[in-house]
Image (cartoon, rainbow, N blue to C red):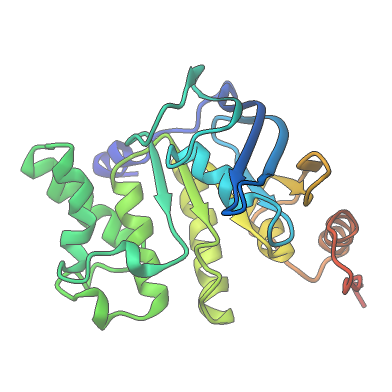
Length: 275
């Protein structure tokens, strides 16, 4: 690996310390009728440094709310979320967020300028900034598109810009809220493979929200299944001990798929079998 690559890709820590901890987390909202509705209930879990955790569950179970509290966009009504042992009190550069929508990109800035935005806020030296931008543009396959504007890009390319922008800032934790949900199947599969390889190579801690069981099994080393109210949120906590790169049509993959399907509140579920 080159010296430049070594600079931007920290080695995976040998000791799996706790990066993120949820302690008795609850979140409630007040409706216009003044009735209070609790959407997150009794969440207690730990995410190890370098781990890739997928949060899976039906719509309305509080997945995005949970991520927004980690990002610092919302505060818990109960309990505390700790990062590296310290309570999260608001947004911070140590937590990078990749959104589902491409509206997070600035349409008046080029690809290169979008990736540079967070680095400018950090006031990095120009030489280091340029090096980081070009490195991550290459890592996500955008090195030939730096001068283009978001309106000139496909949906998949826009998501790659978001990923490059976040990784260029070198956050401790990567937060992703269904970032590939709006993409076509082929582009989605490609970006899942690229994301998995990049995050494992960089040793990033990832919290990934999805409603797609296959996506969770392709990416995560651990899957949390959330339930709707009024049950406590964490319904299952399942390790995914499958080698990378992962293949869908294998018996171990199908077994885990069916196990997760059984845990999800889905009236239309049908098991997957390997022929």
